[in-house]
Amino acid sequence: MIIHKTHSKNDLIDLINTLSLTIIFSHVDIKRNIHDKFYELLDDKTLQKEFNTDNVYKIKNYNDLRQYLKKSNPKKYLTVKEKQDIMKICKCIINYCVNGYDIEYSYKYQTIQEINDDMDYIKQFGDIPSVRRCCRLMNKNRQFQDHYIPIISPQVQKQLNDKKIPKNVTKTIKVHTGEFILNFN
Image: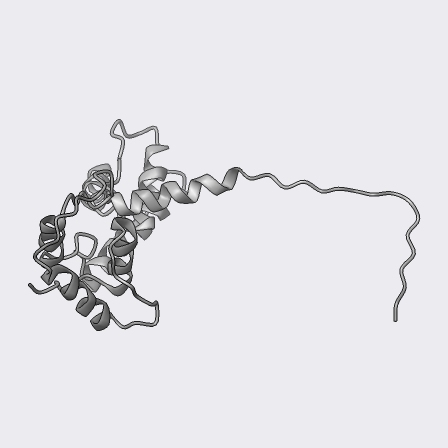
């Protein structure tokens, strides 16, 4: 079995932590060392453990894990050139939105249909924060009947949900009045 090269070191570490695999690693380990540890684990033919079915990877057992690692990483499907093109489109759409949704002030778009076409193209890349922002801004526009919902991978959706939880913490301050003596040595 060969682990596909699109799985990064951080993705493999996240996979180990999510599935609670019996792989001991250090963050100073290089990607090759973590690959070797995965090979040692997956070469064991006696492994029959079932994983928790509510993990974001939808991996149920070791055979599913082997298949997942053989295939390319579902999060890494864009080349650098494709991502640059998507970012250019996002900049143009954000410019259109910031300028009051007025097509006259847009430097790229001549018709509303061009904007619709670009939005339909970029909404499939919802893992990119700029795409989510474009969708959020375009959904505020009253000219469009369509609502643009970005397609987000389960891993990124879990990260976004985890970020929302700690924001509800409130901090208080206690004020004491009276006379205080400060000594400086």
